[in-house]
Length: 154
Image (cartoon, rainbow, N blue to C red; front, side):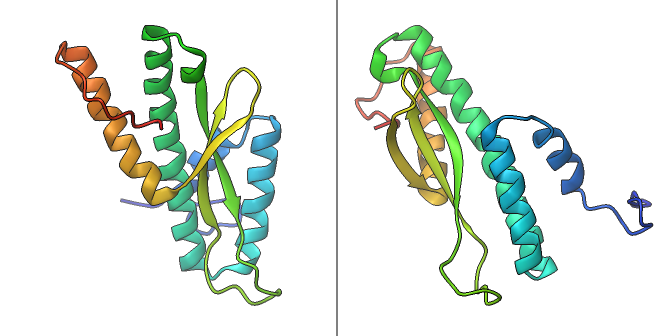
């Protein structure tokens, strides 16, 4: 397979298409993510930056999935406490420039949709565990089986 080339004739990074689609929006969160990606690109080695982009892509796709399940949950059980959404936050290591020992940490925020109040933050690993629990909840809910008492959103 022949790789796509970018404008300068170099092989195009497969993340470019994802980023162009995802970052073409003009909301404040997208503008901030663009800025963080641009700043991170100049601070990380190419392999570490690629890993960071892969993590961002996977996390954003997982957030989309979690938000779809969360909307389903709210429509089925319309409680104010269920009207929430997930979003991505990024924290940078506190090393003086130009020293960067690691990629920024991806943090997932759970916020109330009515007033944008922060409910909680999860690190990426914990969010992925909770997403698995949400998908199990969704599967059980659609199968008509009795629900577990554990609430993956709490």
